[in-house]
Length: 403
Image 1: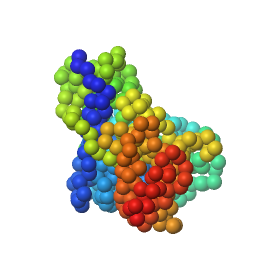
Image 2: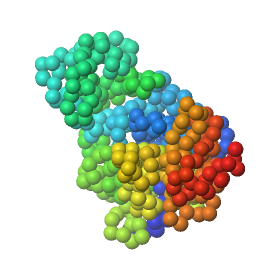
Image 3: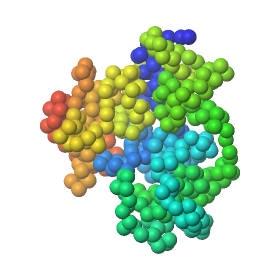
Image 4: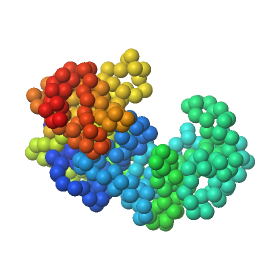
């Protein structure tokens, strides 16, 4: 068993995630967008739009000012290079992973269990019949065509889902219907899964549970470079115990190596093709839903940063802000900023800026440059730094030098 230092494991992760090098200052092709997405395997989707939709941000972090329409085309135009399904959460993933995810990603809490059996079966038949006509439909359109009552109160999450909506979401979770894209209002467009997948035969593929988990664990390990079992499992939200078993089998087969990090007792799994750069020279603002940071324990272990998203924290209890992005500089997370795209005033608001302990002297200057690039990508004309956080004053000075 080999031993890595924390610094080495950190650089392997950054390289595997495509964050170890400065971005190329050149136009980005759709092929480059697809290559970056395939490297990550997962682009998590979230409805929060205070800055930009979450699935757009990881590619900006790695590519710079790419055209979001290129990412849209990858999952809304045929042949689709990405499809939406349950992975880490609702995510864009390579379509060949669909049969493997379907085995493990049953979101039963979404579903139709509370709908009486006869009604559920009737609605399934009607919904599948509507979608079979060939035009992708939103949930609202499905409910309207079925005569659903959108006013019926629901329990639990407080949503007002009709029985039709529950059955539709259940069909999506089971992999019988898929997403043909999203509307401008971010509503999912449902269609038969065979019409969504680039190879319709994938819709009928049945995969053994162990085989499916082996594929998912292997893909996650490759995307992470080196990681403990719980981090590999978290990537596609698979069970840790079962994931650890298939990782052990991959080690026996020679597809992965076991290493320790700083001599710790926990085994980490290393992709044999992973690259260990001599140094990391990248720079990026990271979405709260970026695959580098969404497993918080790994982030803390490798970067010594305690990061929690505070969207759901009451305002008076927030420490760093509402929509906070960690700032990666070279091989360290050196700060975090609470950002908001103020589209009415055409400006990027920095509601708060905090430096991490030991942040280097060029943190404010590098962050100002990154914020300027982000504003231009979002087609905002100004960056405004509000006076909150221990980095705000120095950042405001640096931002003014760029205007």
